[in-house]
Structures are given as C-alpha cells and as structure tokens.
Length: 143
Image 1 (cartoon, one colour):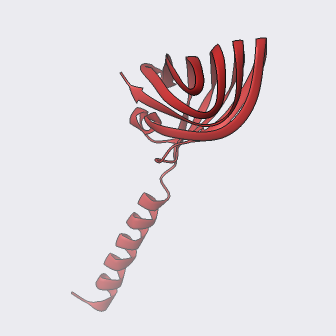
Image 2: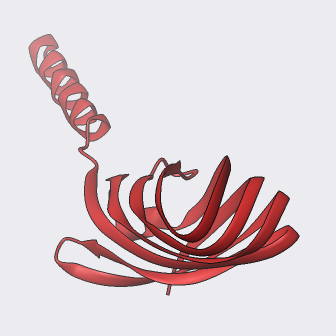
Image 3: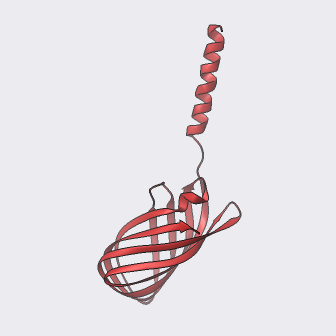
C-alpha cells in the first residue's frame, strides 16, 4: 500500500464518519387526549396517535403530578414532534413544571423534551375544573 492510497482510505473513512454524524433527524405530527385528576397528588392517562412517514402509530400516555393539584380535566393536544429518527424515539418520559387554571374551557400550549431528544410542540383545548402549580411527568409509549 502506498502513502497516497493510505491517505485516500483515511479520507474516505473520515468522509463516511462525517456523513453518519450529520444524519438528519425527521419530524411527524402527534395528537393526544389526556385525562387528568387529583387532589395534591394527581394522575393522568390517555391515548393518541403519531403520524410519521405516512403511517399511524397508536400511543398511550400516563403520568403523575405532585404539588398543588385540584380537580379534573380533559385536554386535547395536537402538534408536531421534531428530532426523531424512528417512531420509537417519541416513547419516553417528558417532564414539566408549571401552573395553570382551567374553569370550563381554555387554551393550552406546551413544549416538552424526552431523554432521546424528541421535542413535542403541542397546543389545544383543556376542559374541566383544574387548578395546578406542580411538577409533572408524562410518559408516552407506543402500543
């Protein structure tokens, strides 16, 4: 092997590695229906759908809230998920700290990130009687 072929091989390997490290993450759309209720400690559960590359993937949600939690609500959220390479990247635990009040119907918007780097940007409507100032976690799993 000559020096020029060794250099050529090294450059080829470097180019291949650079191509792998700059892989482009994709995005999809998500719709979720979440039911929430509690008194001091609250819980949530629901279902949804991920649309990714023309296919639909069913989702389930569940979570726990701790802090000032009172009441019950139903929230319908729609939006997009960014920074995913496969449907399984949406699955994970999303954490949030927040406060809110819903009496009757109200608007809701939230941005969440999981441990895999998936970013959910959601907005929608919340219906019910719910007052909260809490730490909450939302787990999303693929069915």
